[in-house]
Length: 434
Image (cartoon, rainbow, N blue to C red; front, top):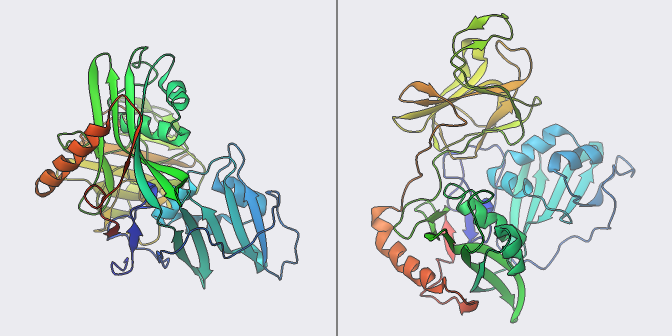
């Protein structure tokens, strides 16, 4: 279990580093430490992302500059590092989220020991946070090295003349924030189809200052989109567990309770159907109650919604299977797994996006894939088209504080660019304990 007395994060400017709720069991030792960001404990020599030819009995540092299209698996392969080490590192949810968002020109520093064992991996997650992963025995100790800069809120507004992405960048919004804005309203607006010339947008986001100099920008804390005369607004707020979500000014959650796919990379090899040709028996059989995602063995599988595992074991022709109950109405099933993630067992709670296992070819199959089912009141539904419910709204006990904050932020969603220094009255709590 996580030790709630030592897991603390200063209000992160990237939500992906927020830890899952207590209940996730990890073999890995996880320690989050807060210290000054700009002091690097290691100086690494710039090298290409190719396997190092140093003495295999000695440890050596190697720096990798991320190229367009790179992911961590590609980099591990080029460095000659084992996929088991990759899985061990990615098994930690906040670490996985950070390292799955690698961008071109990002820098990774590897300390590679004898037998190509990763002894340390350093990654600057953003302007104010460095991620240090250190191997201790067979486990990893993880540290966030973080500076606490002065935080101000800045507003940028603009009008659509060509497309939202182009016009937002022209208005000086960072590309990551453009992506974040589109994700916030993804369930409300199709940005390719619905956004038209003359629509307007406004964004309030965090900027970071050190000695009065801007050192970077952070998350969007409020957003507005006027689309064909209809206004959509979003307010960022931390729930009771310290997880940041986006809500309407009335406190309704803008996010859905589920995500569509349990695998990040995988093609639909067999769709949901009331009647289908069985690939093994070569005859038409009963309905295919789920969707099959073809993916290589070992591809990570993640829970599509928060809930509790009610089954984790071998299930007839399904092979290694996990079933998650999300409440009395919804269940999801994940079948043909190669193996389960560390610590996964019946009765434990899981969060949306939490690693639960790996694609395999167990049970009655013709090749490696994930069979995924989405059940509503016990009846199978097409996971790719079923209407998802909204995630939980702001809790009643938090409504007054949320309303006060929402009013402050909405006042900043104006037509002109402006900056507000955060004070004790407008800042969110500086320390969140999980």
